[in-house]
Image 1 (cartoon, rainbow, N blue to C red):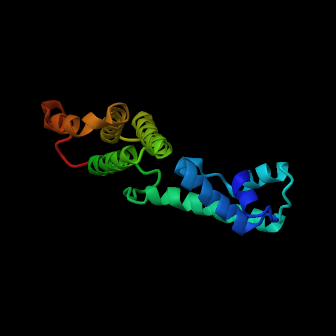
Image 2: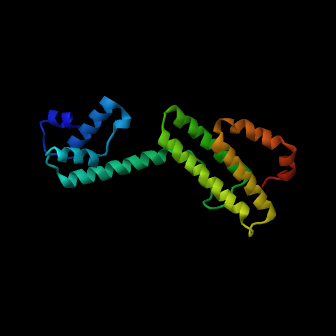
Length: 184
């Protein structure tokens, strides 16, 4: 950070300088070294740099919004299911298969934060199914269905690589066919 700023002639710090420093960080140390404009500004201020506060704050807000949008785009491929509505078996399977496709992309990209966020979403879906399975206001069939779906999410969360094989075995089991012979 300091070398880049000094190489620029130690100008007053505004958007252009912060952007150049970000680019230098990524070019030198890789994408994981990217720092927010505010973090860079703090370091430079500690070294006596004059900050153009309105520009620094505006650029930091723009940068953070762009970061949030990029993170959201990673999850755009997930099926849109009705919020807080119990899933059907086919919806749950489609959602888990989408989770798995994304997990593989994130694994390949070594994007650990995205994998963690994806797992959190699966845990939330599992917890919702578990809650619906325990809700005495739901009918017996719906509770059984949600208990099954809860188990599907549990298996994927614990062993995502095995889920595709496991689900095929599960759906072909006599117990499953007896319990869920009709689409639910």
